Image (tube, rainbow, N blue to C red):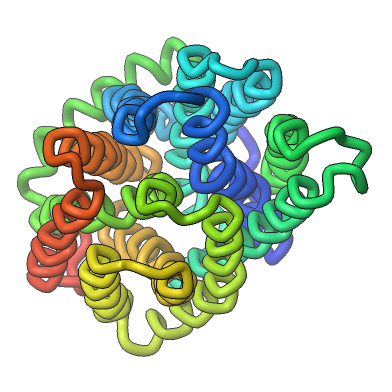
Length: 421
């Protein structure tokens, strides 16, 4: 009999949250920040903006499609074999290697850049399945809102500080021994990979999974059986599938804004430096806001907190359609920073309340399955609408219905019920 895992401790919570501190460098510096700018101005130089927007949308959707297909099965296998940490390490290594590879892509090489971006995105999204599931190994259910908020807050602060240093390097490349802003951006991909890898180590060292381990073959067979059983039973878990449907709709809008905001701003004619600074504003506003939403969720309930955030997002979407001046982009960034982390963290903690703890990775596989399915549809939709209409603004309004429909379904979810009921 293997020894029982130690009870959750403060050290485990901190080690778990530090993974968000580390991998958020990829989310900020690559997904939201430098990659869209570099992809449009360097790797797709000379190409019409609507075409480069479409290419970026396809690249985002391709990475999400792979995770869409793999997530539920991977989660089931990891649960059966107590392999969440091992799978997290594998996907992190994949993402780190591909991110570092972006350094070597030359001007005009959009095909290779897109391929590496897709692979890195698979590593990032795949690792998050197991990171999210590990929240039930590091804390008790009564503290889920706080711990989930702590993780997102650490991500906003760590990602923001890292991104700020990278932006400084692009503005003053000579201070860092670099000869141009382009060299600084390329170098930032290397440092992103290193930062992500470094802050994975505490989780691997100090977070303990509950349950006994198993051989990979045994875990594979047992996991597939468990997956099929859960798919069969899921229709009886009304609270779970109703929440997942609501989440699928509203997180589509949230993720699309994260991934496409810089591209959207550039298509409207705003300069890249202003857009990057706006992203920094989101990060530093998001740090205290994520903690505040964790506190708010413990007071009024996570569902109510999410609904507040979705109302703000709906307003931002309409404002974005009429956007004219750079100062408005900064204002929108600040407003998004207030609610983005809250919607994400409370969605995770609310869902964790609804699912059985002994199948956390599997159920979070479904959670990420729908989240990534949304991330296929949203960016691709914006790209297609921009190409078909010739007007980037029109594509923004497509997000409004997602927030409204998601909020309507979420309101019908009974937060007191669990999958075990």
